[in-house]
Amino acid sequence: MAADCAIEVKNLSFGYADVLLMDSVSFCVNKGDFAAVIGSNGTGKSTMIKLLLGLLTPLGGEIHLMGEELSSFHRFSKIGYVPQNSGSSAGSFPATAEEIVLSSLYSQIGFLKIPNRRHKKMVMEALESVGMRQHARSLISELSGGQQQRVMLARVLVNDPEILLLDEPTVGIDAGAVASLMEILHKLNIGKKVTILMVTHDLSHVSPYLNRVLCLSDRNFAEDTIPPELIVHAHAASHEFRHEHVHCAACEHPHDSEHCVACTHTDESGVEL
Amino acid sequence: MTLEILQYGFMQRAFLVGILLAVIIPCIGVIVVFKRLSLIGDALSHTSLAGVALGLIIGINPIIGAMAASLLAAFSIEAIRKKIPRYSELSIAIVLSVGVGLAGVLSGFVKNAANFNSFLFGSIVAISDFETALVVGISILVFLAFIFLYKELFYIAFDEQAAELSGVPVRLVNTIFTILTAVTVSVASRTVGALIVSSLMVVPVATAMVMARSYKQTVIWSVIYAVAATIIGLFVSYYAEIKPGGTIVLTAVALFLLALLSKWLRQRFKSSKMKGAANESV
Image (cartoon, each protein chain N blue to C red):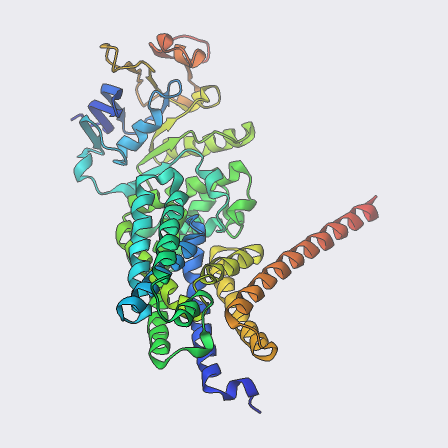
């Protein structure tokens, strides 16, 4: 087990019924990485996140989170998970931003206990960190898509997570809201050293903030003996990632797995790092 | 001066039982609505009728029969819901069909049809001391459970997966909630009626959602609307000499329509005020 891995996956296999979706996938996301998982539809990007959280059971392989084997891992409050469309699906629920964020503090409040002032202060701080403090008492349904997504982020930030797993957080929100969300994530990654793994199709907007890109190919592994191409191209965490440009062939051809072969980082002048 | 209606023991009991149920039914209803299982009350109450019929046939207290059938139905819904999570409403339809079918067949074997019919539309003004004590006990139990499990139930209703990851004992809380729902529906069947209980579970929640500005307010307003509907319904039914169960539900629906109208008027007033301000500035 690599000491610097916040997330380590070894020989992971997963499938539904008789379809093998992943075959012997291995990778490591280092502490402090801001990584994107890309790949065409159906390659198992969201499935990968669910496997990391133990929401799905793999056919084989190992998953380690913060150095601990998943089966014995219990510090899930330190893993912030924002599922796909979480903002819009929460939008129909008649609850305020404050109530939604407060619910996430369950592990700190405890079973059958009532939240106290300290918990409410933590909620306000989490909302403040995503610029939503003034909307604490607003119904989630009255907020815009971008604002709802920021509340969903505050919901996981309130527990001061060490790892963030985000599934398509930029879907359904406008370019301005995407930029604002990415700035918040960038600050968390740089300032608080939060490790971020984000499933996305929107590499053009998010790439300036990344230091890693993981490509999942969409091969049918049940028929193909070639192992899945999980391409990881990492660079030293000391770079100022904000000024890097990430080029991944797969990003330009997201529906063509043949192009999912490599990712490179270049500086602003285009020189490969 | 005491109102004439409150001088009668049976009416005092009706108010006590009605108000207690009006407090606990919306508490269950809020969670049921937000879990997108609004028709669960229908399925449980119809299945409880099968239990009533069975109780009357084999000679046990029909409320006990209703509770047993309702519990069985509630756990069946949960079990089917887990098997087909993407079509969870199907679980209700399946159990509802079984309940209606069984109640229909078994009712044919009940000798005292009037007793069985009293469960269809309820008989809040004709309940026994035992039934009153049962409602009081169950109401206290459900209310305390709802208060103590408030944040757990909210979290599960909002995002069951996240609640599980955060360490909420989801299975335990869901089991407790299922039992409370089944027990509440079966005792309410005797008072407001099996065909009406699900309306009381959903309509006050819908009314509260029109006006409330938070989840907490939704819960509080649901209870207030249900209590108001019960009190008004009992008064109207007494003086107009009409059936109380149906009157309570129709009052709840009238309050819902009033809430919608009030919201529409407020919005119109607000927009005309804004238009006026815009015209002035021009």
